Length: 81
Image 1 (cartoon, rainbow, N blue to C red):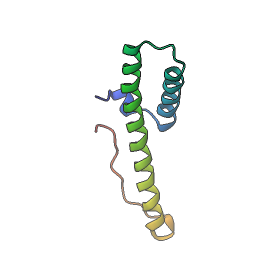
Image 2: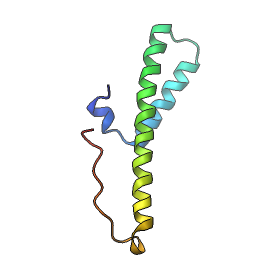
Image 3: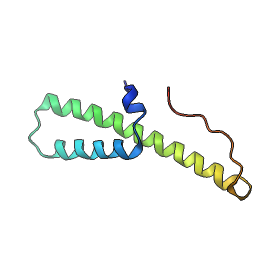
Image 4: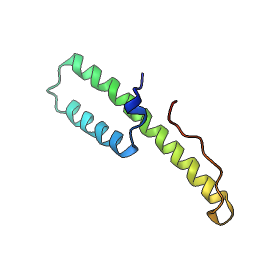
């Protein structure tokens, strides 16, 4: 389950945390139980990054389709999901 702080995290922060997790996991010094927990956290962070990228892609498509890129429709916030 994603916490509120994770759901509000920027793409860049989530990616940085994911990179640190992967580095830690690749070190080979992580006990199995901790490795599984880090894998679960990494999976959540990856999903969060993918969601942020999808939202950015949709917004870019809206800009490209609008006349001169000036008139945009309101895009629902992903907060609270």
